[in-house]
Image: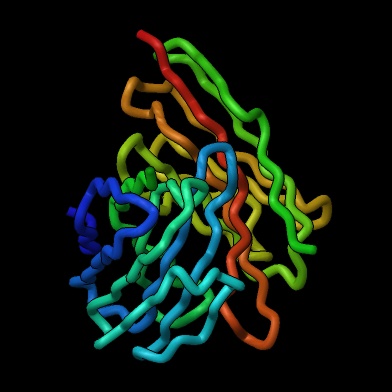
Amino acid sequence: ETGVTQTPRHLVMGMTNKKSLKCEQHLGHNAMYWYKQSAKKPLELMFVYNFKEQTENNSVPSRFSPECPNSSHLFLHLHTLQPEDSALYLCASSQTGIDSPLHFGNGTRLTVT
Amino acid sequence: KNQVEQSPQSLIILEGKNCTLQCNYTVSPFSNLRWYKQDTGRGPVSLTIMTFSENTKSNGRYTATLDADTKQSSLHITASQLSDSASYICVVSATPGGSYIPTFGRGTSLIVHP
């Protein structure tokens, strides 16, 4: 148990579907993140929330829409995705502060057909 | 542009052998460097953190080194075990305006064979 839970673990969706990824952290952290991990590429930061407020939007296409209703929950709403969006989507949390490590969930493996 | 380069891209060793993974970075201003281990199908987990003043830090069979002058770090694994098979990711954080903005390397994929 990592303390950060992501659901679903696997998701297959068509390009016209709408789906949502869910992340919940049980660590009392005040920052939450979405990362995209593609094969042979470094993790790409997508969104950052501090105390429920979005502080980073790393030039992510609007077909990805984050939502952070409270400090423990984070969602990523998906619509009209492209096949190149297929990847592992990782949620992470941390305490605000330079020396605080990121605690990752086990990710959602997304396949867009 | 902040960058983190790791080598080798992949590595295969026999159980019980030692190995060293390399990380070079061009992140400025430097705050800290972490090594993460990512098992297949799991999220990354932090192994060590190195700050500017630290040269060496150990965590069990893992020993990380940092040379802030040459902007290089290494992760040495001693007496490897099958469970060490994973991707090892070097992550360097900068502090522009006090924000936590880590730069990730592509990772080194380590396979330990019996």
